[in-house]
Image (tube, chains in turn brown, purple):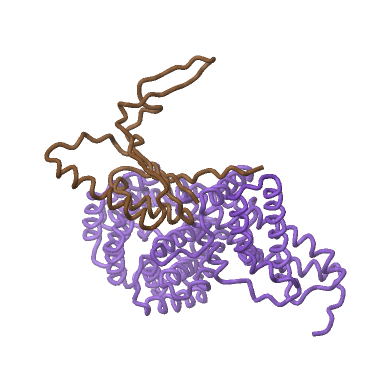
Length: 118
Length: 443
């Protein structure tokens, strides 16, 4: 089954200091991605640019209305995702728990809908 | 084996009633053929039982009626899945859909091979029952959903019975169960025994569900009844089932022991007028001696495994009470030590409060009060009525009736159960008129 792991966390200030600090910060993410690939469960995954870059789009009465900012103003925002293919929700939860962001943010685990081929 | 005679209406009814009592194990045995789809399993079992009425009347009651129902229900489920997948394949011959259907068919090919419903089965499988338990108590479900699914599918209660047990309307309970079943199916909650790495957490979740059902039966928090025996007994049945399925898990045995040792006191917890009787005042001759013996024996067996857990500790505390001829003759020092260990293991402030009360009996009221205030300083327990009950009773023991009355009034204001409120009213009246009265551990 395919699951989307949605990563929610409070927006972080950009890392300052030496480039090697940034490398050190990213290392757990690289390791996590490598582990997913090695286990053969990784389908896709990306980080998103900061919430300030978000634009919300609605079409009402054929008119496209844009709003600067996210769909919902919340403290924890969507910052990235992984798409994984595993046997069941137990394994999906286990992968979510291993994500570095699970330590400080929240992981939402959502199964992909299987559209019945009627 | 001689050919069975045709069944009379009476004998068919009796056999069906027996099978209905076995519905949990039947469901568990049918589930593997249904890929975790509880709806499909439920329907298949219902259809098989409907078929049984005419089949058994015409052909006689099979040697193993439950096994017959399992085989027929499995076949129904497989037929349905096959016709659904054939329809899908016909309507849209896409490779992925065919692959999914094939994988599914391969999975239950073994079950489909059983062709003779009369064949001896031996397949009311222990592992399938365990898979059902772990699926219903999956932590990805909310606690109320876990409890509802467990009572409905593991304990085999009807939706109306589950609704009555939790004082919600049958419609609301049906919706809760439907939502839970939908999540089980769509979120991919597996019908399997968790891998070793997941097992400790998952087992804890299963035990928590049964413990919660027991506690709700023991003292419903918002009901007019002081205790709901049916729920407590249902929890004991569930704990027995878990113990049968997992005899080597010390905490499972601990849970059954705890339920039995606590429930043994039930006959003495309520007096002839329906009022609450605290443990100190209970007529111990009314405690259920057989239940105590069984609980004690189970606990001894669990402790021998040297795999101590919170439920075994709580059972050990209950056993200390059960062993004491009177409240005064209780081994309070032992109880204090057990509560200390429980606090060390769980960090539970509630255990710490109970430990402080035990300390008052083991040492003196001032020692108990000091321990109690130490707990109250560390944790915010002001909204918990029993904190104030404990504070009030210890103050009464120490002779400070003004403080005692203030605390018990506070407890009364926070208590929702009407019978508990009545009990606190009685205690307050005693304090105001008689001076010192007997304090009891809250029971």
